Image (cartoon, rainbow over all chains, first blue to last red):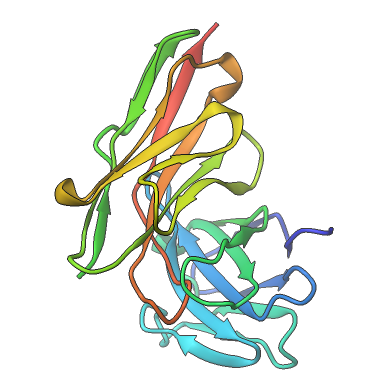
Length: 115
Length: 114
């Protein structure tokens, strides 16, 4: 079974530039998550999709971050404009959407460095 | 707000030593608990999880964790560690009975000396 795919793996940009990350979840998984993991911390949920609808985006900085999952499969996360503090690993995860406690499967992440 | 605390940020052990990594959560209701592991250069992956029933949960690679409700704890243990257990370990909690959203702790970086 193919895992969660993410691209690019690494990205270096200057502050105020824009950047986009792509995620393809495990086939058939209804729920998709984007996390931000700053060095030395655990992953922090940015946004959760159930199919193509947003379930929770309470921690997404909406003035600069946006995400979409138009067809309920793959998803993009965009930052515009980027700030220095956005330097982090951006993780995508998916799950079957069966409810509480279901296992989330993580992709390799995109490591973003903002200069 | 719910939170997860991992007491040790960095642990160094020799091979064959016993391991216990602490995890506490703050939430008074029903929880589902997880330990995830990230080996060097690899994805985050599930080590074990607790839903209900026997509070002693066994996971992959000889790991186990015990849920102690009265202490709001879910400590991870392994009787004899190996060099290949070098990794970062994350405790996580799901507090919403309607979905599978989880909150992670800050992680514990474990380094095993050969």
